Length: 125
Image (cartoon, rainbow, N blue to C red; front, top):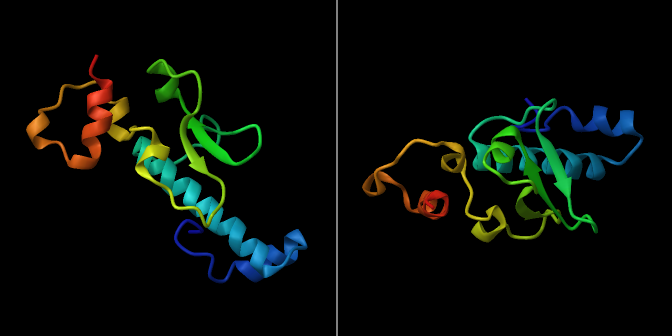
């Protein structure tokens, strides 16, 4: 429910965390953004037990590490997404990866959408 909106939860969360409503609102917005970006990359919801968020050394960027990315041979986190909620996220931040990156089936290039074409071409070796 919190992925959609924080309406009705802000006051309770801010009081419980002993923080302002503005801080709680930013925290909820970041959590929603993390879940949405994860779904864009992997095509499924974030699993707290299996999936990891990896932060850069200075906490300016983050990426994701999952079973799919490890099986595909990527030891480091996938993506370099800016932590700053005001920063614009570009396609380069996703590193050309998307849900199609983790699927091993052959795809007809004529039926691929433009946004998935880069990740598909990178998967071809």
